[in-house]
Image 1 (cartoon, helix red, strand yellow):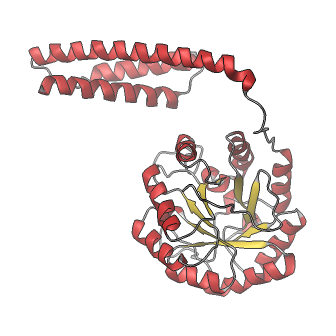
Image 2 (tube, helix red, strand yellow; image 1 turned 120 degrees about the horizontal axis):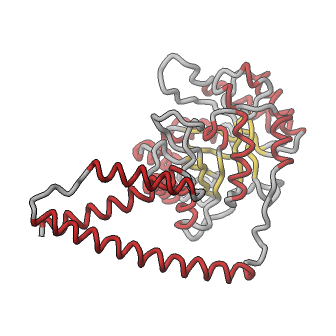
Image 3 (cartoon, one colour; image 1 turned 180 degrees about the vertical axis):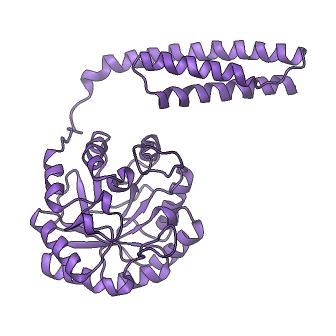
Length: 354
């Protein structure tokens, strides 16, 4: 994807963050126009609204459907804003294009389904509309990149990615876990791909939107897609994660945007220290693996199983507590030790089976 083009549209400032805002769902023409008018007065250039709403279970509000597309046309005509909506199949694409929708995005449930993404890609052939692809519901980077490649192979060059977090069964502070390492790796793999954060779906609560926006900016995301409603508490879907246009303006005005063009020459010495420490880490890990292999040899000679669950639990608990005392998070310590343990087990299994 080395020939990607800008997703920016005429009249939209080329500065961070690009902001796309509007209600989770287009509910009524009055609600759409009231929200769009308020957002336009705040300087928002791109309006978003869900026309078709994929729901986890049947019976909930699933969007007004095609009837809402003329409302978006009216937003364009009366406010001068660009309009965007989600598409999940070829029919959605056809209707959106017929009604001059300016930007399309593919939702997390759809991007997890290669058949659905390919259907959308086929419907997009011959067009030049910007398309944004949300990450799949599970943290599968290859699946995310695969969805992007399908749209790219259809000839779309105005392509971007939306990070909306990842589903989990565990009860966490976030609705969807950010797992920032996944979009960071996506940027490393495709450096020119615009990256937009969806703090509404990551947080799931309006009070989390501001800190998530700031974190996205600190990680050099290009833009934000935020759910904004004229009466959030009365929203027909996702009421708890929507904010008023006034609150949106406040959040955007308080964002600190770091200077990405600032020279990094002054960091050279510190980065050299990091390189030396990384070398030391690799050396220590190598020594640890050598000891693990010796343990594997002992287990083979004494016909012992590789996995010793009690010992692993003891190591994990002690290391996490020690890491916490040194200022490192529990999640980081667990991830690091799980990876080290997995590699130790792999090497011991090689020895036992040799």
